[in-house]
Amino acid sequence: METSPLAKRLTGRFVAGETLDEELAVCRQLANENILSTLDHLGENVTSLEEAAASRDAYLEALERIHAAGLPCTVSIKLTQFGLDLSEQACLENVRRLADKARATGNRVEVDMESSAYTDRTLSVATRVAEECGCIRTVIQAYLYRSAADIGHLNERRIPVRLCKGAYDEPSSVAFANSTDVRTNYRKLMKVLLDRGTYPAIATHDELLLMEALDYARTRGLGPDQLEFQMLYGINRELQKRIVGLGYRLRLYVPYGTAWYPYFMRRLGERPANVLFVLRNLFR
Ligand code: FDA
Image 1: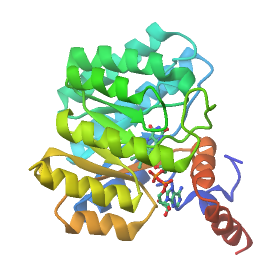
Image 2 (image 1 turned 120 degrees about the horizontal axis):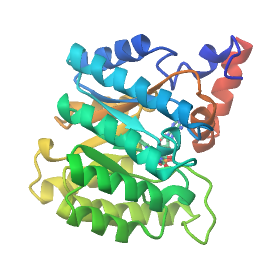
Image 3 (image 1 turned 90 degrees about the horizontal axis):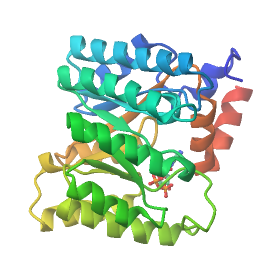
């Protein structure tokens, strides 16, 4: 599917394009609309250390180009793309190289969170590099039971967190299955981050939670420069505009590249109506 000529038509709503040039053009366009971005070079679960090194190099080039273009754009990585399945040490070194470059260019690396099989190792690598370079943001998923404890540790170390609901199919032994429970936990964790976190990122398209976050931030006297909202490229433009219109920082997660299949399938899974949207495009 990834090499099909239909790919662009299928994925265009959620993916900026196949090349770095196409990605940066989208980030430039967003910057013109006063929207920050985070670049995701699609790919996960690489099967050799050479592939992991190639992913790291693609990100090093991206950081270079972001810096040269002066774009307000961080980078988001998945550790299985940096070799976590093959060697934790090699993965750590790859992340260090990228973090060094980010620090040198005044940027930040955001470490996405994958399935619960990787949570411990991801937090371990992210925390180590964050303590060395101070330019890492890590992700916490509200559907995991363990997340309150993880946020506590990250807050103590002053490591910035992106809070999302969680996108993987997890067993009920580790995660809330019911969407109301996930929302309740999200609300609780969001307040902890707004109270004691370091420059938290509230990543959701859930309007109710977003409005509650805005209210809570105001009640706590947090200014618009003390937190940011994050959303995915291609989802709910109206809500995006409202957040920016209110004077808050909004960062969009903008993926590019050819390895779009798993990312795309997670987006379809989140909203069954997207399948109809895709089918309509296919028939057109
Ligand atoms: P919810 O799924 O309840 O959606 C609320 C509303 O948003 C829906 O009613 C719909 O209107 C709209 N919406 C949501 N998803 C949509 C979709 N795919 N298509 C169309 N409309 C949609 N997850 C993870 O496990 N690890 C990670 O590192 C990240 N990183 C990340 C970064 C950023 C910036 C965001 C916004 C999200 C993530 N996620 C993630 C994904 C996250 O865990 C979650 O799966 C999605 O954000 C969907 O959950 P919502 O909070 O939007 O709520």
